Length: 139
Image 1 (cartoon, rainbow, N blue to C red):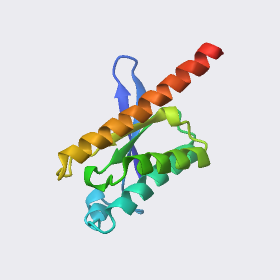
Image 2: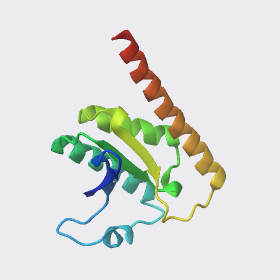
Image 3: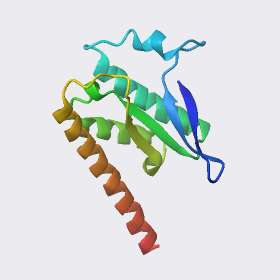
Image 4: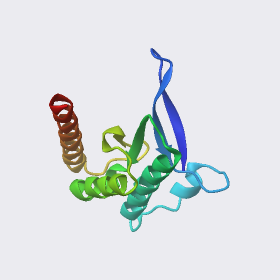
């Protein structure tokens, strides 16, 4: 796992880190992704998200964390979100700092399912922002 900084050019600070899969000891993402197939795609995605969160927490990451979803690996969006939230809670990583992204390198086989997944993820993100706003208002 590697963390690629995403810079805010106006403030000249790191806005977030995108979690990228990398083999231990060096190499490229292709070395790992070439081993991902239909039977292990879902499990692989879940393990990557959990690992990214655990490492970010261990490193004490302050900026946001970008976590990738492979569009064809999101069989059940709610389950993916729950598993990711569980990892954040377990590792005490603030859920409001998680950014969900879909990887652009995978061909989308079912655009309707991808739209449903996007809606579920965006609804979750909105709910988190409203919760944070509510806490801020209550003090």
